[in-house]
Image 1 (cartoon, rainbow, N blue to C red):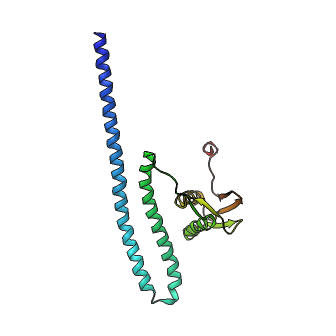
Image 2 (image 1 turned 90 degrees about the horizontal axis):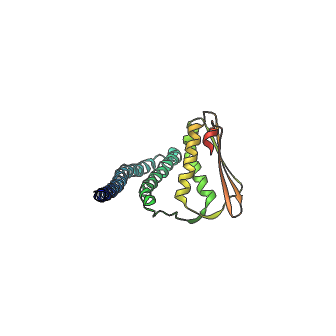
Image 3 (image 1 turned 120 degrees about the horizontal axis):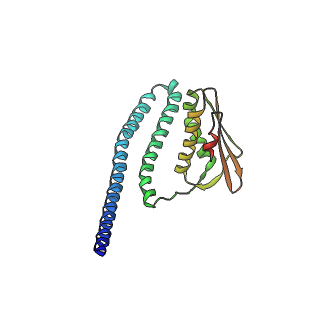
Length: 200
């Protein structure tokens, strides 16, 4: 009798495992479908924004005096549209990470120029918050291998946190230090800082 009970118990566990695997597979498919659908939904309004930007550029050609100022803000809008497209791509990358198929895409680029461009792209927004932002570098150019998209995500995340926790009249400083084979990128702010218990 006990042997039969053990067999029934083993079979039940096997069935439970099979149900669990099916549920996990279904969950993974739902998640992949979700990212695919949301990426499609986000691309549509972005494409409309791009179309509107092109029309604005055509219309402002007639206003030579104000064109330089308008082009500056159009440039910011365009840059952040591209940034949103990359974020959409990153949503797809999440499924690759879960599946173990995500790798950084290293490119030889000027790290100084890339970081400076990211900082400048948020400068107007930062200043609208009453915060000053400064970019400082020991070197004018440094060609090295890194993933530009990953670098942008990291720097924007650090800047976003700095803006969020820095009060008006505060300062944010982004610095690049040359260490020959590597560079050190520092983001400092005069905000509240990270509590000691969370610093680790």
